[in-house]
Image (tube, rainbow, N blue to C red):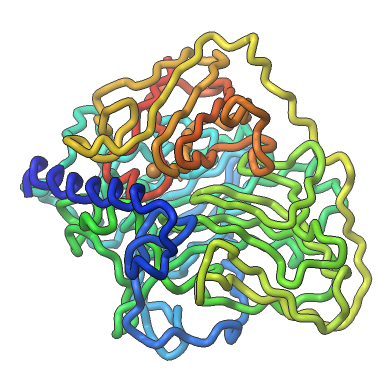
Length: 525
Ligand code: C2O
Ligand code: CU
Ligand code: CU
């Protein structure tokens, strides 16, 4: 398929966007199969009976052991492979996995200590590994064209990969690639995922996502919940075919040539099954004590408004201690948390605020029917709790706007007529430098949008300065790498480009928007 044809399909998707925006006040029920309130995308309907919720225990992804360590470095190995996983009871789902599980294994690194992860691609298509939230040299950051071709590939590139401009700088290797992470950065909840140009949505949906935690001594000295009371929660949505395989409206079901999804799903793909750590609506058996939950929205395009049901007496049940880039200065009590794709919210829930034996659900207030449920916490008998949440967590120096060398503006929009999802009117082109900050410069970036877009920068974390000219919102605190833009909003962020020069990207993390070119180059010089 030629680039022009795929653009034409995008155009059809764009017409859909305009139509929906014009419908304004209609309830979702009046628009079957169209949009869901609070969601940019269109929901797929599974073609098998959905399992009843709260039947399976919450899995916790295995922590990967290094294959070896030396003075300053830990070495890991991961094989990317197709595996059949028991995602839904009684069904087997072929998935693309890191090491045979979904989520992939969790890697735990220490701040200041180098980690090298060697990936081997035994999947049917090229991949790219990106460590989201990593302060990473550009050659290990997973630039979208730095492909890792499947083991044994001899005939790359394939005859045509439609809709994607060629990249003369692409660093393409076959079989294996070692990614090196210096981890000159704070403790934080990071995640790694596929980032192949034009196919990130499909790759992540097929299962290519895992946690990578960075720890440091100062954080571990705090009396926060630890051990098996420090639990990463990867929240995703999926839809299933009758045979248990995943439904995804890829333009090319083989994920070989034409990138992106069919026009009807150009706004984003959502599913009707909510998975936490790869299990549908699971149950966590917990003691009535404090737990640290590292919430990650790894869904392609679904937004969540997470809340505890029932709320604990007095409310404020979700005590946020960290954001994308690590600990906040002080905890923030939330009744609910708005989490857009790729964001992490580190929260402590004090289950002692409930009676022993109580049932507490984590619900999604933006969902309806099955997507309104996320998981259940089933409390057992009381036990001692040594953990607390200190009033001061960490030092977060506010960046000073008067130090900014430059203010850049980026408009995120659907440029319907010709280009589809664009930034400043342009679809992604690896050869065009869209922002060229100098190393160590502080900059203000102003994001303006038509529709909802979660905007993510590689290389650097940032602070939100303002939202629509007013104070940042309740979910904008601390160091972030992904910020929610709601329809017709303007958000200003401030950041410093430290550490590593080179070519990176920034993009919308609605993965269908990203694949359909809502991405731009960030070239640090
Ligand atoms: Cu989570 Cu550019 O990625
Ligand atoms: Cu990233
Ligand atoms: Cu977007």
